Length: 155
Ligand SMILES: [Zn+2]
Image 1 (tube, rainbow, N blue to C red):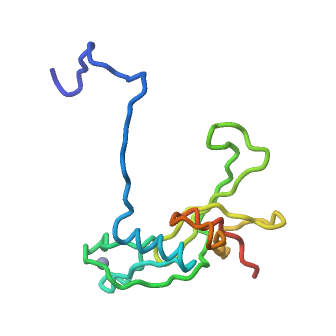
Image 2: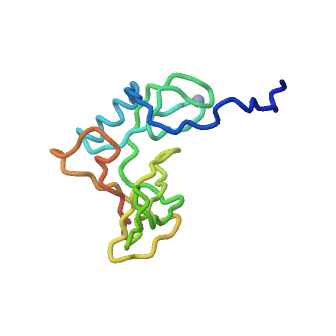
């Protein structure tokens, strides 16, 4: 049998529940990245001086030259909207009456995908500045959702 031929008796789908347990760790860089968001309301990246790139979210290694990165950079909490979309469906598939806006916000040479609030339904355009709005410190858990959303910066 060649690789392109299928065994007609082989199962093609699994229609039942599978018990899966796992534990996801964010790694050394992720730990520091999320701790800074939780404890200080800051967003950090790591800088590769060889490639002159600042990775956001922070990374332990440069994806271009594979150098270990140990220069941590506070990239601020304001970035640029690179792209955005409107969600008309909830996560369970039900219809939303008001769309939710999701944007990719450039910070450093990377960025964060997150909710974008537009006060007074201000029109959103690519290239606008958006600033992270953090949850109150007592409500933060060390997750990207410690950033409540980004909001447009006037001007
Ligand atoms: Zn590099």
